[in-house]
Length: 250
Image 1 (tube, rainbow, N blue to C red):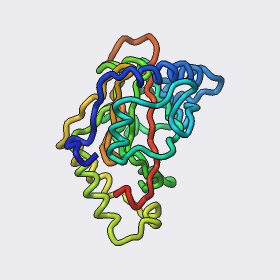
Image 2: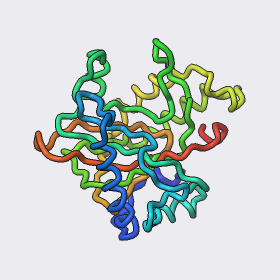
Image 3: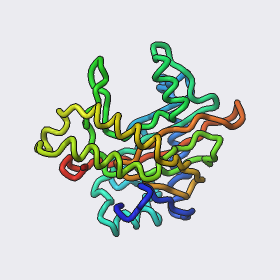
Image 4: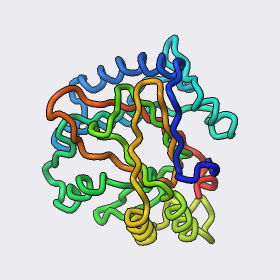
């Protein structure tokens, strides 16, 4: 992934990936319609972590997880031996709505800055201090429906992985990797995020079933507000975020 100067790579349509996406879509739609499905932000966002029942090889019955993007990751030594269960991300017209209890600042950041974040840096405690609780190797996005600019695509800030990576690697230096989840990264992370938002260009990750994209684990990313028709079906994307040792994250 170090040969991706912008911190992400996009892959064209592949019939093998399209077959997998077709099988995944039905399972995802069933999860969205299930009783008690956790729709947030005023019922406009469903983030089903590990919600897709794929196997440890990433495949679904009769449909292996295969295609140019998977082979690229394998050649680069990035493909995991065991894939996590994919996250189902669905966004409905009107995103982002505002949940009860959500502060105006939190809602404004989601609306105006796409909720820009780096995966694995979780808010801890009442003060929401940011700590590295999950070390993801990358984020692989597989559209299950067509994703256009108006249908809340992921935004990835080009080049932000260098700013974020340098800041957090410096903050973690000197501590053994097993202690990294205990280190408060709030200030260096927020400073690096501000710099990235001010200097890097947000790029929409568009696509249709059979296309794919991968973003570097340090790349700042978020979800663009819905700007398409105010009614209709949600857009759905499956995300794989395999975990790696903390020592390999920085």
